[in-house]
Image (cartoon, rainbow, N blue to C red; front, top):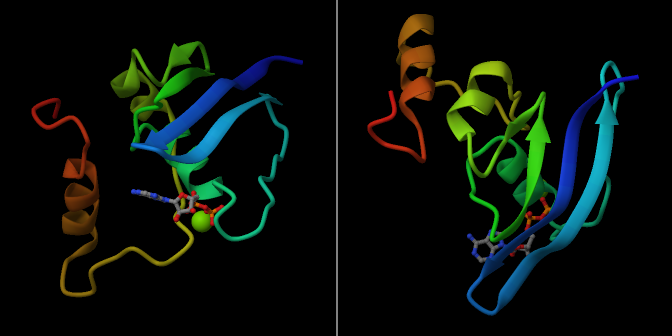
Length: 111
Ligand SMILES: Nc1ncnc2c1ncn2[C@@H]1O[C@H](COP(=O)(O)OP(=O)(O)O)[C@@H](O)[C@H]1O
Ligand SMILES: [Mg+2]
């Protein structure tokens, strides 16, 4: 079975605060994979690195052959993220919500 996501020693530090120490795992194409852990374990930070919202301090993840650290825009073109909470502005139309989300990027100027 193909590997679609491979996390390699992914780590995120904020100064001296280590939020993700270095996590490695593989997800196969078609597999349903869960990250489980208590509050503060680093699940959201890990997902944020996989979805290119946060740049890893160390390590990398390869998603369908693209590096989140070196090719974040290529990763963004092929992934979808469904947030935990409803993240829509009720005052905006559906198209305006999509445009707003699409412009929220850690790489200003890339769009
Ligand atoms: N921007 C940040 N700056 C400093 N610490 C952070 C930041 N974001 C998250 N943390 C800390 O990182 C740890 C992991 O958080 P998080 O990834 O949200 O965990 P989880 O989603 O598993 O509850 C927590 O201790 C949290 O307080
Ligand atoms: Mg969380």
